[in-house]
Amino acid sequence: MSATKPGRGRANPASPPRRRKPSDEPPLVAIGGRRRGLPFTVPDDWTPEQALAVFELIEDLLAVVTDFYGAQLNELLHEQRSSEAHARTHELAPPF
Image 1 (cartoon, helix red, strand yellow):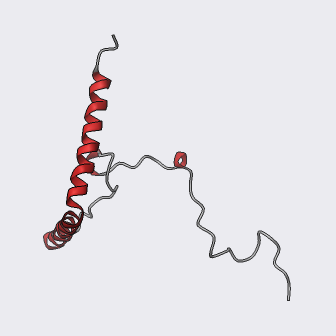
Image 2: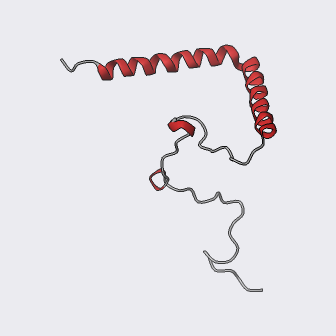
Image 3: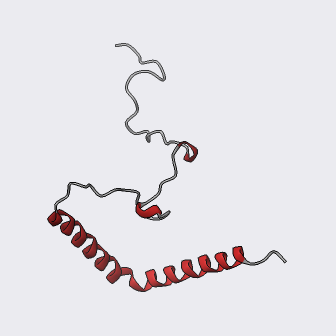
């Protein structure tokens, strides 16, 4: 029975995969140039029925999440939008 040298042999399956540094990755931009959301594209070979199925799935997911977290989501969205509007107002203010 031969011993495996450190750093050789089978990789440790319990070790997490190597993560790339944020500087290594290009900035992610969602559809339409949005900076939030998931960066993905819709396949151009979907049938209208497939597109409708995805739309309905997303609509159902939105309803379930809203039913469960509705009030909390409204509070968070209000806070985020208020702070973003406040930041934009201060960015546009004259420096004097």
